Length: 484
Ligand code: 5AD
Image 1 (cartoon, rainbow, N blue to C red):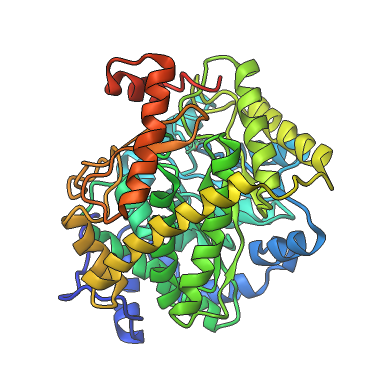
Image 2 (cartoon, rainbow, N blue to C red):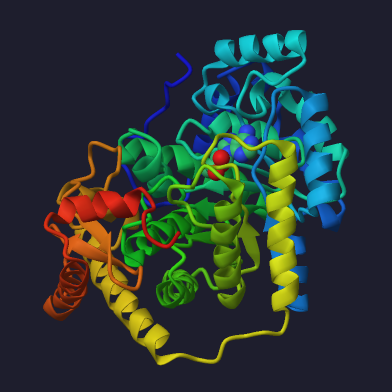
């Protein structure tokens, strides 16, 4: 069974030893016949041969140094030729700085037979019958062809705890970044038990840690897009990233790219992006990971999109403005066809181009400090610190044990997670300024003044807009009724 995993008896946030790592590596290889072509030594050789401009870590460092903001899309089609042609378009016409390798849903779920059928059908019909690139079907030979066709880094984008083999094949092919995160994927995408998700992502962390020990920097991007961020107050997404960063760092990951999902609310997003990077840094330092590097990234609005590109351009442009002001190292682009379906090459490139133009126009235009942003940041800091304290208390200092226990008790809880272990008592809604507030704080351990602040803001909106039913207001927000 492809989904079977070796479980360790006890869940712990502790670096795996070489024996356990090699054992699980062999188990991951065995998930598909192309896995047997992968070896740690071959992976090292392929990675070591890459020039710096094809490494995400080097490209992020250069962007940081030069004050540039990088632009990265998402994309994937079935065949190797189709993939190269698509990415060439995104690179040459759009100007993407980092290229994606988004696997199809079958590959993400380890349903290789269906991925194979989709690939065969795509070859037969001449059009992609898969919603991404079947990384595992193509194996290292196919994936290396894609990597070799470009002079910029590639990033593999597969957020689920079944991602171990696709990630392994991609890294063995010269891809230098992977999307990652146990809590992110289990809260947002998976129904996997959190214990299993943590152990699955510990494997990816250890693989990347192993490469780091051999002189190969790989970046991990913590991409909380599956999580219902539109109405969730920012502290919740930040906690997910802080925990995932700590879990990865323990396995030896050193280059972290935490992503903030923008809500297109200027004050709150600026406070949230600032606190995401400050809190990741603070907790990394607290646990002794001072040599870890953070490359903050921002994701364009992840709520509902209109079914026309004109309004969608306004949405991604506002996100780009905020991402720029937040001093993100990179912006993850959302296609303007999001309201219609997976993007065509033309509009995907168009979205990248608009994002780049916006960033160029903003060069040297920084907003002055703002007290409202500072106040919002302080509240976010208090919320995250209170909940993280409880997580660490529950785990007696172990963040893996703590987060699982805290989720069980509803001490950490997010709105609308598909994961049955999440309590689902916490609800969020927007206030009159478009900031996300708690409609219900469930069992979250928050100070009373913070809870009251959120309640007041929600009440002000209800009074101003005359809502009779709070849930209708919430549904309206999720449908993207506000702000566009
Ligand atoms: N091509 C382009 N974008 C994709 N996404 C998922 N698969 C693909 C693909 N094959 C995008 C979705 C969503 C984001 C999470 O990833 O459209 O915006």
